[in-house]
Image 1 (cartoon, helix red, strand yellow):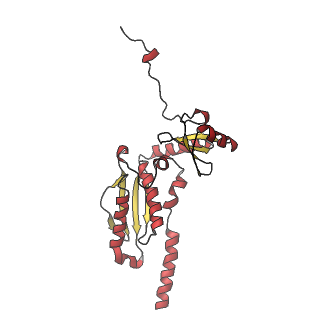
Image 2 (image 1 turned 135 degrees about the vertical axis):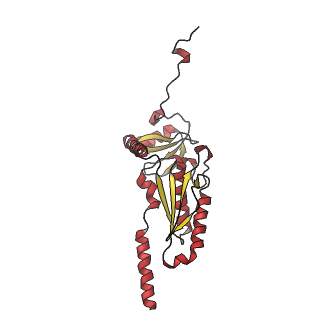
Image 3 (image 1 turned 30 degrees about the vertical axis):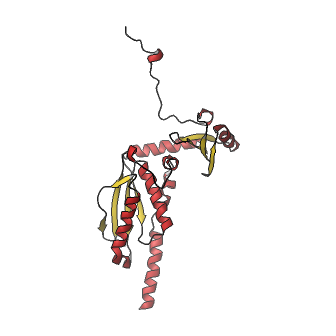
Length: 230
């Protein structure tokens, strides 16, 4: 007997782009991020929805696979627009490349911040270009710069692998990392919740800004010192 379509044998269509919000959120508990990006902690969705309504905003599930799911209090229309814009940008380029810039004398806190952002970017499936720049007499200590780059590669080995060995090109050491397959990625500097939340590009690139302003100031100080010595 031929089974007719429909009934119990009919497959339900699952919309992967569907975003749960407000009273459609099913989890018993959720981790909530406030309207200004602050962590509000874990709570029932009903309690979080009351907070969202008090700000005249929506409660939106942004990381459904996390345990517990992560929700943000925000303007849903604006959030959908940002996601749509990011999706269009990704369609234009099959892979994006982000650059992480290091200096040989980088402070430990700055190093960890850059590695944390780099890990998040690789975890999201993007390529990463690591660049270390020498200036002046720093070229006498190329081994220190090379060790720093190798340390960054090691710290990011849970989410990416180098396409080649780090290479010295003039005053720069450069290496490009490609993301590991998704099922092999292991986070070290981010929680799963932090790594899965999509942010606008201007927030993501905060720690990848050009350092030319700082470099030019250092160069002026170095030149001034040399003039006094002469």
